[in-house]
Image (cartoon, rainbow, N blue to C red; front, side, top):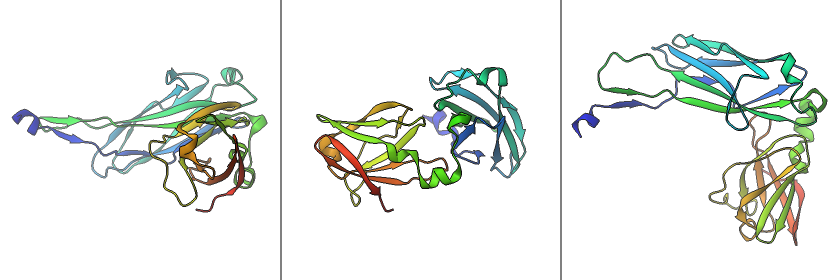
Length: 240
């Protein structure tokens, strides 16, 4: 008991990224990220790497440079994700591919006894978007592909079908525009040209559901549906 009382845990993050997701367009050779040390007094190490969609460490078809760097107090630096030209062609060119960018902060060794230090880690999605399906900012804003999401009821199951070549992430479901989000509805990511089952029943979803998704910029627009029988149709973008 006395030993535990002497342990101090630092659980706040010092190293931060400038975004919540990475869109790697096929027409680009690399993407640069800003990484900052928010601690004004201590230097930190920043370790970066990629994982594939199965959360396995991936060294191709991208390289992360530098994989490890020292950030002085309040310093901002860059991390570059580069496409390995000889390997990038192995990815599907008719749809997005999913990777995960990891950033781990390594604090300096404490000069105080009985201190437990934690190396915090951030993980964000990296979507490789082939050149043939790249989107302009106008297309992303005015004709979002998420509006093509098909919502179905199969008995008591709720199924979302994604007929597009892009990943779609739904972060909440409400029974109606004025209702609260349904409890225990974790974020659901629907891969290109596939479908996913929601962890709610058709009864819980109701006949006028509102879905919230995440767009390329980290925004959270809403979509409202009207259900009849087993099919739900998008009726309009729901107001915030």
